[in-house]
Image 1: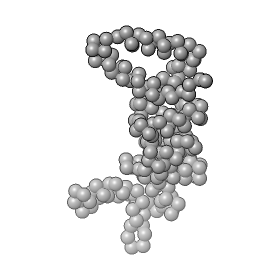
Image 2 (image 1 turned 60 degrees about the vertical axis):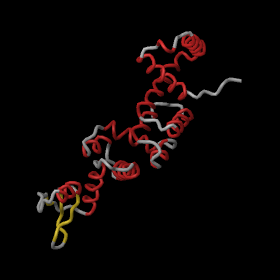
Image 3 (image 1 turned 90 degrees about the vertical axis):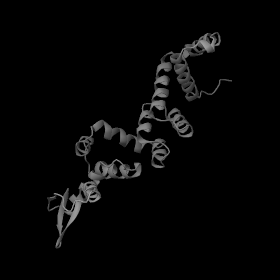
Image 4 (image 1 turned 45 degrees about the vertical axis):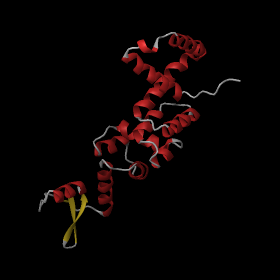
Length: 205
């Protein structure tokens, strides 16, 4: 916990969660570090502490990162070290909040930040927007989005043979006895159906 002198008393500038926890269990006192911080330094400490909150909203996180990286010119490594995260974590968050498709959905609490991060690897802007919208409408979680993205990556190199491969798989599945399918095969089939729904390709004329 960090405080600074303010008149005849002290002002709490970092450690709000610790204070609340101490109050909840009835502690009359709690150790604190006294620093003579300027208003600017106190503001930065508060921002950094907020970034470590578990209940931090996407809008609060975006605003804090905007100040530290865009205005204060902190590097992603500096931010990561301050909040005990890696620089890649910070970089991915910034990319989500900078994305014209993903940012509005995340800030409106329609898509979680971690789920949106999975869509960053989809380089086609239109395809990324379509997947993001489908994820929102069908309430996808991170594993579902990750699976859909992986499936897209897997089929893109051999797209010229995709139709024939799908046809062969369809014919093979049609010949199976559904009652004889083992549990594991059923699970994989369900996943395949989910991926098929994710790949909403417009039919050719």
